[in-house]
Image (cartoon, one colour):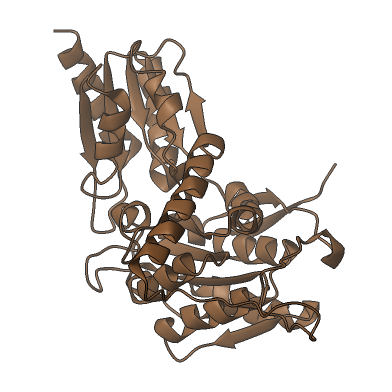
Length: 356
């Protein structure tokens, strides 16, 4: 049996990334994700990798662009305001079809906000990470184990589809310590070949060009259409979710990440009171697991969207439910974590309303 180790979420993501073959990390300190960078600074030299603290978040993401263009597995991490600064470079990566991993350990906002946990970057990650027609694959872990698992998996997903991938954690998960089984390290010969990379041609092949600028509108349109064909494949194959006690649930909670942990406790408490509650947890925020949630729409009397923001995911929930049942929202924002008792009260109230 694999050995379990006790690790903080931020450090588990960093260790898993190195085991996935990440050998370049470019970042900049910001609470509550700084342990990712600190761990990389300590451990990268031991595996022959490169850690560099850039002069800014803008510089860091452009370094990621450069290393990705050369075919390396590369990662950066930040927290909410820092991701905003990286958004231009992320768009450039998407426009150049470059794989890479971006970690966002969210904090309260907008603006400098607070350093407490938040989920208020949902819209940014899933709707508008940067300018132009593009998407990121977005994973939302809810345990330290999943933080390690998806930090590892993100590199394979990024390389397979040639897209940037984001891990959407929050300050609570990043600072939390739990037992985790780390993935087995990949060897160099297990990493995928990248014939498109700018690794030097030695006069044996045509030049590879990595670029996101196209002066002919028709050429850019063709590239965007091809990219959206890949996105359609991602939507078809990469939707991930988890259901808990939803088989007979009258009230289905929908929550991701740290909020899903709170929601699960509230579901258990509701069951003890005789309320048939269940939990649907999106694991991929993009592509949103619409198909799995839609399958619950006919059986449930109502849905309760639980988030640590002002209700950013509720639009996607309503689109999936498609009017088959009412969808209501409960959340706390600004860095306030909802309590199981608060969520339980919302469940009970919604159950009474649905039974009227």
